[in-house]
Amino acid sequence: MYYPPRSKDWLAHKLLLFSSRSAAAVSASVLVLAIAVVTLESLPAIRDIGLWRMLSDESWHPSSDSFGLAPMLLGTVLVTVLAIVIAAPLAVVSAVFRQFYAPRALGGIYRRLIELLAGIPSVVFGLWGLTVLVPLISRIEPPGASLLAASLVLALMILPTIELISATALADVPHHHYLAARALGLSREQAVWKVVMPSAVSGICAGTILGVARAAGETMAVMMVAGNVVQFPDSVFAPVRTLSANIALEVAYAVDLHRASLFASGLIMIIMTLFAFCCAEAIAHSRKSYRVGRA
Amino acid sequence: MSVALDDRPTNASGHGRLLVLALTWLAPAIVAAAFLWLIGDVVLRGIGGVDWNFIVDVPRNAGRAGGIAPIIVSTFLVILVCVAVAVPLSLFAALFLAEFSRASVPMSRIIRLSLNCLAAVPSIVFGIFGNALFCVALGMGYSILSGGLTLACMVLPILIRTMENAIRAVPEDYRLGAAALGLSKSQVIIRVILPLSIPGLLVGLLLGVGRALAETAALVFTSGYVDRMPSSLLDSGRTLSIHILDLSMNVAGGDKNAYASVLVLGVLILVINSGIAALLFFSKRRSGLTS
Image 1 (cartoon, rainbow over the protein chains, first blue to last red):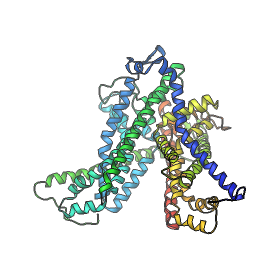
Image 2: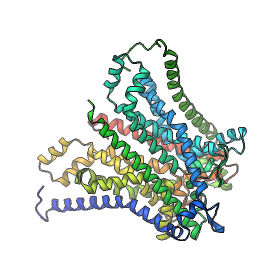
Image 3: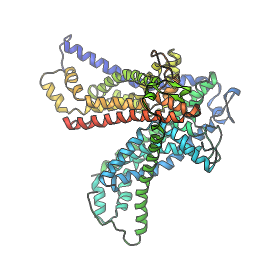
Image 4: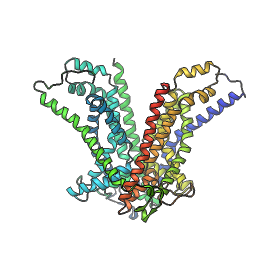
């Protein structure tokens, strides 16, 4: 549009354009800033300790120059995998239930319930896990604060994410696919799992990966129930410490190399989540190409 | 489902189908049971500790007794700082994405990608980032200001996304109609588009506040632990979620007040969620706009 130069409108337009452009630029650079700051802070650790020693050192005793992150890495992976194994089937079947089985009113209530679950702060899950789940588990096998407790709490936390995205993926499959399958004489179960599910599976995978990313990054709830002993766990009842919990427990008093190594583990977490994010994006895009041929 | 077909099990696969059917009802039942168990515990354990004194009293004996007045004040201050920084920034960024650039332009794709990545960064990473930048490098120390700024970085993606959607939800007709009446683009934005998208913008704001209320990991190392009444934004202030964390982890016998604080936090979050639901409901009904 043409504005007479120096008119009131011209000024307003320039101002609006300038402020929205700079706001967008500032917002976009927050990510760069965050990565830069964390990288800068972890440089001493990367330079003086090196990535290899962080993985291969026997143990984690920063005060006596031993910086092995391996137990924490394994802890994060185990807690995450176990949480996904518990949450994903429940979430996917819940989504199927909501889309194809539940009576309208019940489905609405269930959706509301899932959304409420998604809104519960992580510290509340942690408190509940600590005061309810941990004593229960310690009755089976002490000490209770364990890999299992962390995974159960985490499973409950990521379940809504996976459920909501799976339900959206299922709803995205055109309903006439389901109707056509039923008209051909397939049962409801066959229509859902053999016809609708294959089209929705990439969306569900994307949702699950986002769940994984959230689980791997979750800190407070896990820290409260996992026991936080630095060790390679020998059973699900053994206490573990995750990377994120390690940061949260020690960053308040850490100095020098110790602090730098904590920032380095933060950097590892950034890389892990960005990797998961890229995977989810790639899968979500492959879904689009898959659907080109659909009616 | 709208189709009523015969769902009785047939022939050999009957038992298998019954099993699938049972599992399909079992999974949501498990989820619902876990949810009710959690909520029930929170309400039952917390309800006894919440009364007027709990809201207006200061914490005593490391939080085992007394109330949470300074903690509520700190929580609101942190959120205020976060909102004051994040909302103008997000509003203009959303305006840029929705009105001043096409989705296919490299610049706007880069911004979108960067924001999506930012949304995936774990909150503890925001915590140490805020600690290194705001508390140490910029010399703000453990303070409400550091905490609020860290939170602002964290809620940016969700704020921008919802605000952009809200602005885009204004029908193209309104833009064309306003332009046909001779309004310039800036006038169209200020007088037509922004007023019409206010409900959607408010939804974004409330979502951000909800995220901020629930956050712990990003605040522990930025706004700090101090449970006194803050006298300025440069004082350390303990938010509700950090209070809950501290009571349950570091204070033996703090569970009762931890649950009471959870109940207060839960009520705040419920109020915000209901606000969002009401805004969505009314904005849909009034103008046919959705966000």
